[in-house]
Image (cartoon, rainbow, N blue to C red; front, side, top):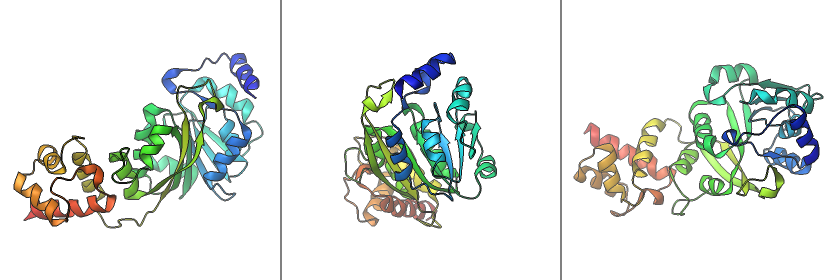
Length: 280
């Protein structure tokens, strides 16, 4: 399969670009397992971000009702045409997914859809946050990312990997590492191992909460990683020290706690206390 892919790329004059983080999977059984772990069923519409050479796209098309794939590299058009020639339920969009609107995605995919993606490092967090914050139709996101990034997504409060992106995910759902994939499975071989994370979206989680305000609190809490929560609230949100201290105490948190020890629920509570203090 590696030689087939290499020949397909070579025959179409495609040289892979590091700028796009192009590392392709070719193991068909592994690709089928990713589609399975993503929970793809025959009634599902699937958005794939970064089709590459189309190997995962093909595996998704065999399980899904519809697949809409976004690929930024137009040089891959002839490659994808060959790879997906028998996949009648696949639509390709050669666009930057970060510039796409929720309205157009809804037009292409319908009211609800699942996301599957093999994401390069440089775009991982922007893509995740785009769909966590703006796409009400997303049921789940199953993404292949660098292993250390996967650990961050699925971390628990207090873990060394826990950060603002973890809280952002937990405000809209929950994340779990469902597969680990060694670097030798990719072409060309990258310098790091990868993992597949599944994020299940719960639209009713913290329903009625001002999530934009909570995200502001989260951003402030992690603005100085080694600083206490109190100092970060003062420096990043402009709170007076006595106000920041009272908000933290009213939540029942330790006076010397740090942002990485707070759960998503804790941040919701803290945001409410900050709102009360500002409005009082």
